[in-house]
Image (tube, rainbow, N blue to C red; front, side, top):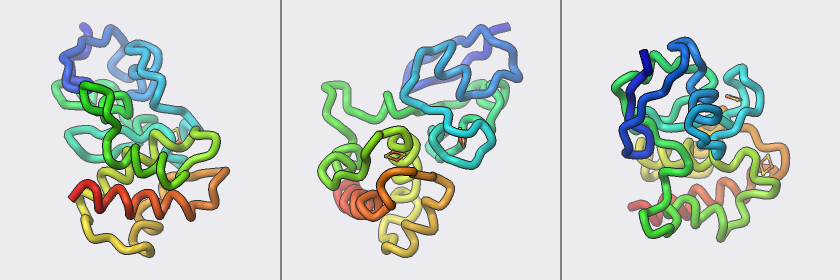
Amino acid sequence: MPVELKVNGRSVAVDAAPNTLLVHALREHLRLTGTHVGCDTAQCGACTVHVDGKAVKSCNVLLAQVAGRSVTTIEGMAAADGTMHPMQAAFKECHGLQCGFCTPGMVMSAVDLCQRHPGANEAQIREQLEGNLCRCTGYHNIVKAVQQGAAAMK
Ligand code: FES
Ligand code: FES
């Protein structure tokens, strides 16, 4: 039986085993390759998506666990006309990325963080993003981007 859920606002039926990892269902069955696989062991955060509005590591969730729920990936963050989400725009403007591998997961975690803690300070942002690893930037511009994105989301 296909597993039915919503992805980026659209109803989909994924014809995969219920114990398929969500990240693999998104990438291999729905071709949403913006969600990356960095470790496959719930450490790096590159696979972060939203499930019912909350950030989760999709390498740590089974497809069966999201049946009937709403999943948002980085592809679902921009407006219908292509305008970037304020957090995406902030990452671009603040140079919060280099190779970009970690960026989709960072953006998804950052948006969730700002929804939960709209007034987060630098130390809180660093603490909240500790589950998202970046090999390139040294995190400094990522923190700036999250602060700018948070202000734009208010
Ligand atoms: S691939 Fe999921 S946390 Fe690294
Ligand atoms: S920008 Fe390269 S891993 Fe973060």
